[in-house]
Every structure is written in structure tokens, then in C-alpha cells.
Amino acid sequence: MIEYIIMIIGILGAILALAQRDLLKAAILTGISGGCIAVLFQILLAPDVALTQAIVGAAIIPVFIALAIYKTHGVDNND
Image (cartoon, rainbow, N blue to C red):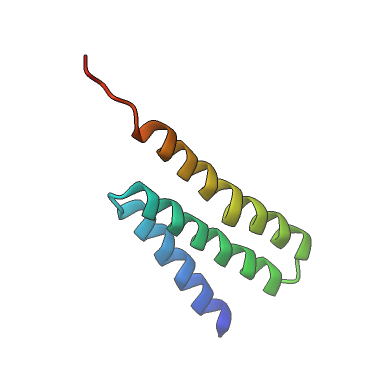
């Protein structure tokens, strides 16, 4: 039963990340979705895949997205 709740949270997080106009909120929601997938892998007794997903999907990708937003947000296009 808990698997279905985690799946719904992950799917809603992904849909909300796609619908966000604020890119930083989209990065956070991407991390939530990745974290839900990592928990599902752990429930399915795949701890190595869960650990990799937690590191990459819930930590590294949202941080890279946030850094890209930060680096490109301050660019002035005065052309």
C-alpha cells in the first residue's frame, strides 16, 4: 500500500516540476521525484540501485539544475 502512495507522490512531483514556471521550484520537485524513486527501489530490495538513484536523482541533478539557473540568471542581454 505504501508503494502506491510513494508512486503517486513521485508522479505528482514530476508533473508539478514540468508545470512550474519558477525553475528553482522545478529543480526541487525534480529532487523529490528522484527521492521517491530511490525509496521505491529500496522497497523492491535493490539497495545498490536505490543508493545510486538517491545520489544522482535526488542530490546531484537538482544541484546541477540549480547551479545552471544561478549561472545563467545573471546574464544580461543588452543586444
